[in-house]
Amino acid sequence: MTYVEIQKNNFETTALQSLLQRIEILEKELEELKKSSELIVEDKGAKLIIQGIIQSLKSKDIKEIDVIDLHTKSNLPLIQISKIMEELETEGMVKEIE
Image 1 (spheres, rainbow, N blue to C red):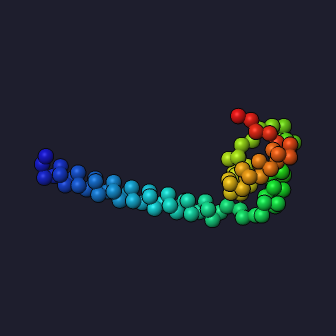
Image 2: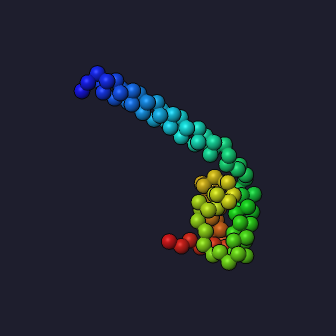
Image 3: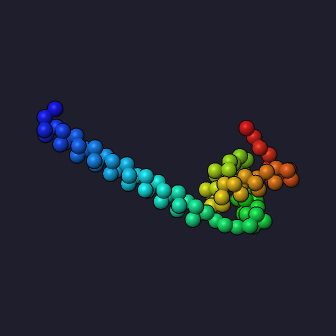
């Protein structure tokens, strides 16, 4: 390798490392943003929100929805949505399909 090739390789490596560090920082910021943007509601209120979404979808003749769709539409934490969906399933309001 010539001196110029080595310098070019060093420059590319440094630039790549810098980009990778920036990506890591942005990924962390995105995770924090996701956490801070989630709606914080007691389970009773969250259940009403989810039931409203389900009713809205049923009125549009949509019969299947997953937890990710509920999260997107409600902005509630996934853990809370899962817990409420289990309650609704126990109450016979929804049923899980695989």
